[in-house]
Structure formats: structure tokens, C-alpha cells
Image 1 (cartoon, rainbow, N blue to C red):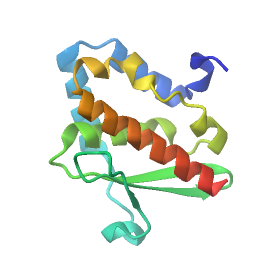
Image 2: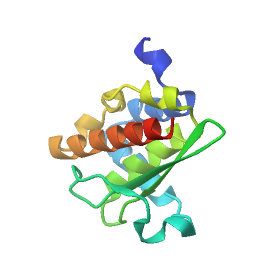
Image 3: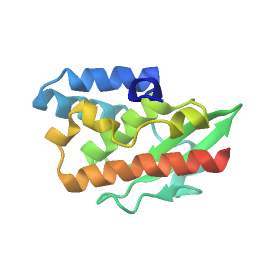
Image 4: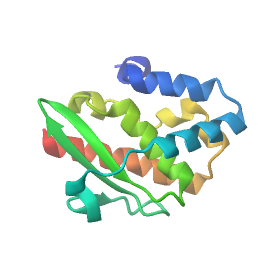
Length: 143
């Protein structure tokens, strides 16, 4: 499977927006996604059943829930970590309600096509790579 066919359409649209943006616009887009991150549903408050992404410098919690063969992700990332929060939010926007196979097929380095390596430190890039790895692992557990 080539890279283009492994990227779900919603995620591809987000990648295109970032790719076509300059450095400052990329940061603005991340902040916009951070602001749009939905609140956790009541049953997940207090991180009940959520997994912490320990590779992130900021406290990032994620959980996958399945319904009818589709996976939905919930994140909790503090507002004080806006770039990480924005990245988690864009992952959810681009990957929610996909099948497990579609989630696992997303290339681990897709963020390079967004140009995020131009605006984030290598340490942050390692953390955001870990978020996707946790998502894939949790999706596989649901299968």
C-alpha cells in the first residue's frame, strides 16, 4: 500500500492544509486544533480507563472506544501544552470513526508531509510520534 492510499481522506485534508501553510500558519493551525479539542465525556473524567503517553513531555491521555467496527479516540491534554494538544486534536479529527485496519495503515511519519518538523523540536516530534503509536496499539486491542 502506498503512502497516499494509507492516509484517510479527513486526515489527508488536514495534511494538505498544513503542507500549504508557512511556518507561522502551521503554528496557528495547531493552536486552532487545540482550541477545538472536545471535553472528555463524563465516563472518562479523571482519566478512568485512559492510557498516559509517557513519551510526551506534557501529560497526554488517550483511549480508544469501538462501535460497529469503527474506532473513536478521546484525548485529554492540558491547555498549557497547546502544540501537543493541537496535534492530538487533529489526529482525532482525521482518524475518528475509521476501521482498525485504516488506523494501523496510517504511516508513522505522516506528520513530515505536514511540515511539522519545521516548527517542532525533535523532542516534541518524538512525543507526537508516540501518540500515534498508542492510538494504533489501542485500536488493535479493540479488534
